[in-house]
View 1: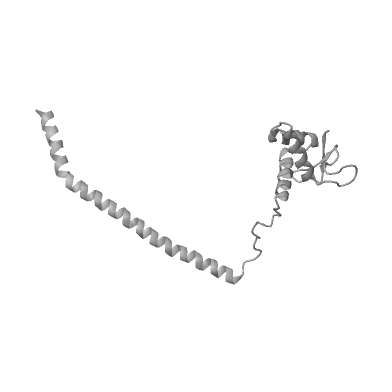
View 2 (view 1 turned 90 degrees about the vertical axis):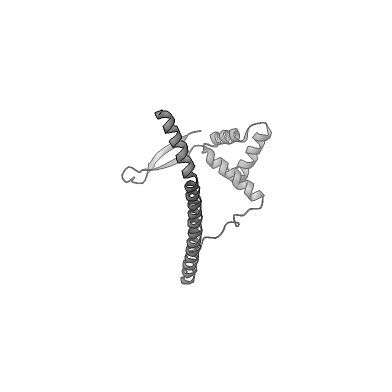
Length: 161
């Protein structure tokens, strides 16, 4: 099994379009009939290899080599079928909003401004806490200054003697 790369298109500049033709039969066709999807066949083949004692990662690699496809393609097909069997249809994702209406824009602006007000309150509280800590440090240094100076002066006198 081999991949043949051929040039396709005009290929502007450095970027060239390459097409790959696989000399193997597509994996989802069995006897000319679409009996299974690629995902289903991949899922069953991987599980058979794993049941035979092979690590799943090695099974992905082996199947990728057999089919002449990237490992990520095989892995994607496997997990696509896994999700399909679990009943996930992809409908659990949030739909993307296509347009912003004027009402949406106003709501977003109001929400942003409310967060800004809340942030100002939080900044004030943080500054107050820092100021209180600085005041406490100032008081502690002021109260201990006399004894610390006296201790240092005693050491200076001892060294000069």
